[in-house]
Image (cartoon, rainbow, N blue to C red):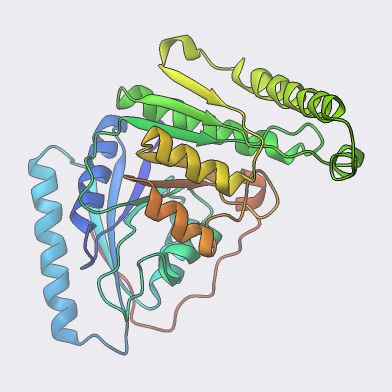
Length: 313
């Protein structure tokens, strides 16, 4: 694909961290990219001995990766709050993607659909790939969730990113591609539908809106050579979250690629109860992206008052 040049993999003690590392190494090899492993220890619960042992473990892992052919590999052992430190590293060093397990190691870490994962989805300016532990790393079905809307130009950039990543991943993994655009009737027509009208009028209104949204998705997809990728387009009338869950279950989707900006697309669905529902439903994982215009708005936190990061090549 050669889409990623600088990959950050969260390699900690949670269940599924090995799977995330394997995926990151495969992505780095396919893209000839630099791979950095990161772990964050909390200063109030870790000891100097634990930090030394963790550093040794990370160094051994880096050595093994280099023997396996992932030559441009290094690690960083940091001290602080996990999500904050990861985001700071992304901003400072311009990582292209963060890959991590969606599983949690303990109630204290609370990473299972909890604070670290949700904070990364909300705040990390680069794509975040959360993997379900134990799932095959060869994805059979990838789903792109898009929302083409000419009244919101900021959606164009996000839809393009989602489609670019989805088509690249589907090609790389020889996977089937599902493209989902859920819609609802809005404006005066929505008020009309909620009133007492003839069935023929109701059908006519729904067909009109179905046609509008079909044209929008057709226009978006005309920019891609999808004849080379087995694909299915879904344009249901439904709330996006419900449409996502229904399609994930009916099509046995392995990986979802979705926007995570509060101002564009089907945004915000990975920031609360819906995050748990979608992550629980999908078999492999979720890859969230943001438009550059939104990512650029994120400022860097002040340097953490904890011990200096250990950066070992």
